[in-house]
Length: 172
Length: 150
Image (cartoon, rainbow over all chains, first blue to last red; front, side):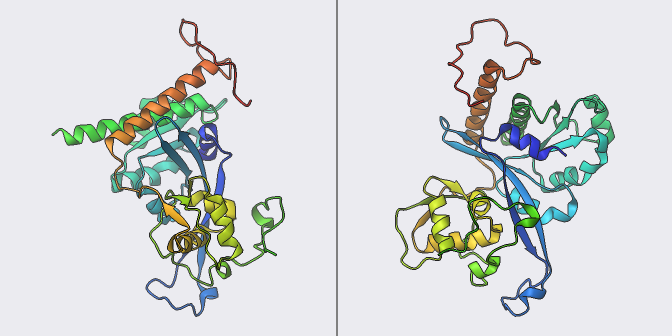
């Protein structure tokens, strides 16, 4: 929950939506016969962009559907990714288990951002860590996904974390 | 005469495609070259002779460096359709791709990104778009004339 909100908070463009189509059948066949009968799944994908002119960099932020049946999508997105933000809704903590598992299995670095909004139940980071059994090395940050500053600081946490992991790996 | 919908974007359910996606690509579902969502594209200035309207539209979108994802979103076509169109344009030398996506971005890129994010963070501090935030500590921040679009 709140993925599009977070993307919108930092994106310089109004978040765009595109759709990815997965053809379930037909792997390994190039025949176009029966195309109509193949079953396809369409997933909407929101994304935003941040341009850093001085650094000559463009950062794309993709908000992916959380459910594990969309993992094929995550596989494409995780190629060349810097890392991931797992945005946690405190009302539905267990909903992010598949995401945590996915990134753990693929060795993709991530931070957990707990989206706090007015009236929502507030946990401490340690409570979230315990509840979701998150490794000590993985940063957990509180955020307000609507707020540009807050959303930016989530991204900063992620990059700091990734840098830390990469540099500690290269110095055995 | 192109089959492009009118000048207002169709939303969600009402967006029945005017042209079925794969007829744009003549049924092709595989791009000719490896492209990611974030592959950056730039028009070379060359205009291929035989283009479909969708090719021309994609090409126009790439006059400034643009990603495959943005081309797909702006064409209102599925990503795979955009990839096929873009790969045609690459084959016709009308588009070039930027630095290929690497598995692990290098250290310098990440440091640059961190630098950029921190500067952005600082400027959103000093611009203080809300009042609930903690005051930027002491010191006169050189506010740059409130150039934000609001």
